[in-house]
Length: 71
Ligand SMILES: [Cu+2]
Image 1 (cartoon, protein in one colour):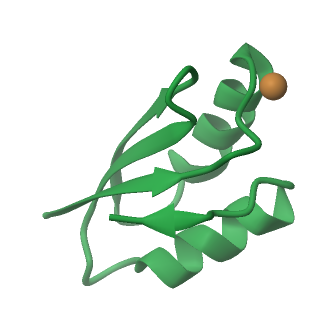
Image 2 (tube, rainbow, N blue to C red):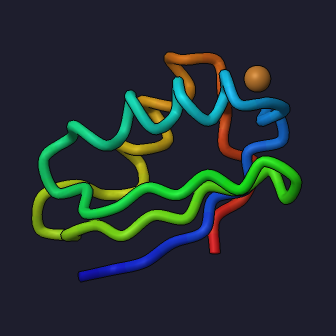
Image 3 (tube, protein in one colour):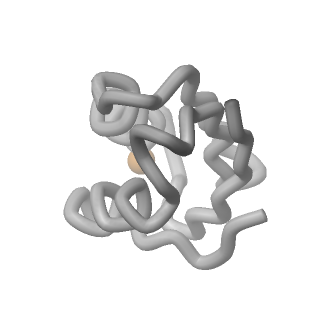
């Protein structure tokens, strides 16, 4: 299991949290999603054999939440 923290500057409220959670949580390989609104970050646990950060980034991009940085 891999972990990542994504910086998503457009996170601003509970609606953003809900959209991001509903987008990522159902994806195969996503183990957990936690959105930190004040920090504008998404904490992700995922199985790297099923999904990678490029795919996650593309999904968030489609929803209007481009990822600025990943650590
Ligand atoms: Cu919002």
